[in-house]
Image (tube, rainbow over all chains, first blue to last red; front, side, top):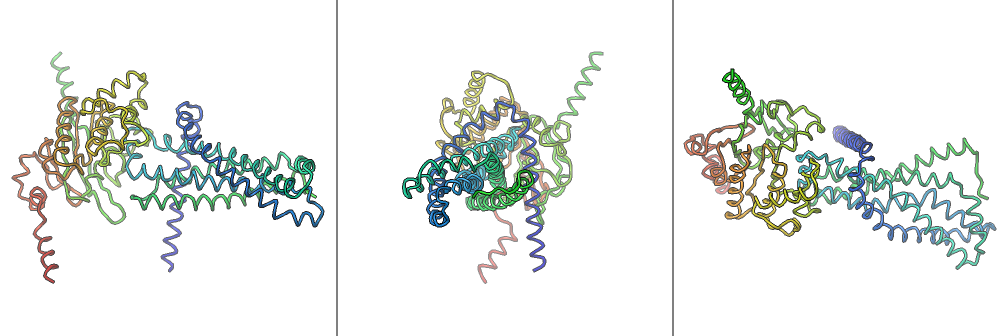
Length: 269
Length: 273
């Protein structure tokens, strides 16, 4: 029992160490790569793959989360006499919390899995070894562009998610529940601060970077055969999902402390 | 004076005849010892064939030569320079001098045939697009696939993929070409085409070649020298002609393509029980 526990612990620490080395190697190529046109030439097609092709999924997710939030909260807000402030609840929840998290989960599922499968297949068919033998660093050639695409486009996708959710909330409040449109937008404008948007933006950048790194790492270290690639894809999504939740908590906790220190308590009522 | 200079040049050339030198190389994966103190010198312009049973460590040895794997101990020299301790960045500068034909061809499936061959040229030289296209056409002609530039790897047969991979391996005119099981998975005529290509490249480019195979017909055809790897070390090193005179039962079993007497006895005992 003890040896099993020890073995698992050593295995987990080894994986963590390997991930750290992988991240360090990526960062070493990333910084000089930012000013190389070749890096951006390789990243452009990935913008389409990561960004454009994920937009529909993100819009559907954002819209339905906005609809559900509005429907679920309306009765309680009306009972308290705050139904005109429903937009604040929907938008703030989306901008600070659900937008980045859901966009991150969607990117991890749709893009992360595809990246792991692609790199895993390249590893199994020795294409990654072929790059190395040609004197081309596979981390520089394959990982840096994928990391950049995830890092830069997840915030943009989060923005789409927030917009769709807010409009969906407006649809429920104004079109279905008969609230006046002006107070809906007025209270959103009055309550949502640059800080709130920045928190969501910061989270989405970190989530995007983590998804890119985890997906590429899992693809690079997958076991041989179709089963190995399949397992790497599953692990890639599960690890990314858990990482998003853990990072979300720590960033939220850290930034709310900073906000309280700078501006004090903010009441939405 | 001129004679002295000639002698010193000859001596210098002699010193650098060895393209690759492996000295007491050890490698193990967990408890499995794969290479157990391997010593091997590859001489310039020769084709050395490494034979051995499946799992004997032939491919592992080949991957050590190009430093895809790092030895646990021992040294690897390329043209007199020790390469087993170099960083990946330092190795990247040396690797264009190696061409490697992978067992599964390892063509980039997101690129066309032409783009696959152009890839290493574009990465390591500053040639213009037109020049690169010309080199690609030349290399494809060398492997007998003229006009295949716009095909996708998925549209090719196994033999064609190997030939494209070979064209890519020679794209930068390397000094050393390594072939990992070049005829595996091919029918006999296609396998012989690959053998002929290896000989053709040997004649036309005068490169040093290392071929890993368990196909004795292929080994006899292309080799200047054959070495046999068995349980982590070499048990035979000689010419293709001398391997038929070797009396070592392990070598005989492999060359004649029959299982060992011990294995035969075990199988019979199991069958009778």
